[in-house]
Amino acid sequence: MADIEPTRDRLVGAVLRAWERAGSSGISARGVARDAAIPVSSIYHHFGDMDGLMLRAADTVMARAAQWFATQAQALSAATGDAWGLAHLLGATIDAWCEDQRGLAYAWREIQLQAMRASIWHGAAQTGWQLLFDFWQPICNRFGVGDMTPSVVLLFDSETSLHLVRWQRLIDRSAMAELCSTWAGWIDGRAGAPAPWRALAMREALAGQPAIPDWDPAAEQIAAAAARTVAQRGVPGLTHRAVADTAGQTLGIVSNRFRSSADLLRAACEALYREIVRPLGEGDAPMDLIADQAERPSDDLALRAFFELALAASREPALLPFAAQLRYLRGRTSIRHLRAILPPDRPPSAADGALLSSLFSGQTRARLTGAGMPPLEQGVTTMLARLSVR
Image (cartoon, rainbow, N blue to C red; front, side, top):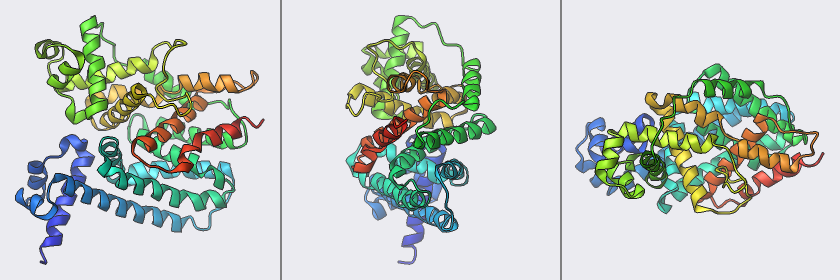
C-alpha cells in the first residue's frame, strides 16, 4: 500500500513533464512509463487507462495552481488602488505565471485543448476558470473595478497563452504592459492611446517574417488543409494521411510537396499567417469573432488552430519565425470594429485592436472548453460599454 501513492505520483509527474516538453504529442503510455521508470501495466492498474492518468494529472495541475494563486493572493491582501494600478499588477502576474510556473502554465493549456475536443475534460477546465475568478474578483473589488472582473479573467487567460511564446523578452514584456494599460484606459472610456511597443513589435515581426513560398494551387490547398487538421485533431493528429484526406489529395502528392511532419507543421503556420495578414474584404469572416456571439464553425476551427499553433510555436525552435506573427499580427479586424463604434476623433490604436482581439479570444476559449460561466459571456460587452461612455 505504501508504494501506491509514490507510483501514482511518478506517473503523474511524467505526464506533466511531457505536457511541458511537447504537449499531447508527447503523451503515450510507453513514453510515460519509461520516463517514470515504471512498467506500462502500472498505468492500467492504477488509473484504468491513459485518460484516467491524464485526468488525475489535471487534478494535480489545478491543485498546484490553486496553491500558487492562494500564495499570491495572501501577498496582495493589503493591495488597493485604481484600474491603472491593477493594470500593472495584471501584467506582472501574467509574466510571473508564464515564467515562474511555466510547467503549470503549459499543463493548463493542454487541459484546455483537451476540453475543446472531449467533454470529459470540461470539469477540469471549469475548475481553472473558477480559480481565476476566485483570485481576481476580490482584487478587482479592492481596486474599485469589481464589475470588470470577467474582462480581467479573459485578458489573463488570453495573454498568458501568448506570453508563453518567447520572442524578444524585453519587447514582449513592454508590449504586454502596454496592453494592460490600454485595458485601464478603456475602464475610463479612453481609446487611441499611443502604443509604441506594440508598433515596434509589429514592425519587427513583419521584418523578420520568413519568405512565404510561392505555392501552386495544390500546395495552397494542402497547407490550408494542414491548418484545418491541426484545428480538428491537434498537432498530434497532423499526419500526411490526415492532411491528404482533408485536402482531397492523394497521400503521394501531400508527401511529395511536404516531406516531413515538420514541413506540414510549418505549412499550417504559413497558412494561418496568410489568414491573419491577408487583406480583409467586406465579406470576410473575422478570425477573432468580432461579430458578437455568433457561433460559426469555420471561425471555431480557425481559433482552435490558432491556439494549437501558438502553443506549438512557443515550444518548437523551428517555428520561432512564426511566433511573433502569431502573437503580434492580430487585431486588424478588431480595429475595424472599434472604428465603427468610436467617434471619428478617437481612432483606435494597434493596442486597442489587440486588446479586443485578446478579449474575444479568451471568451471563445471559455466557450470551446465548456466553461458555462455567464459572467464570461458578458465580459467583452461590459468593456465595450465602458469604452463607449465618452
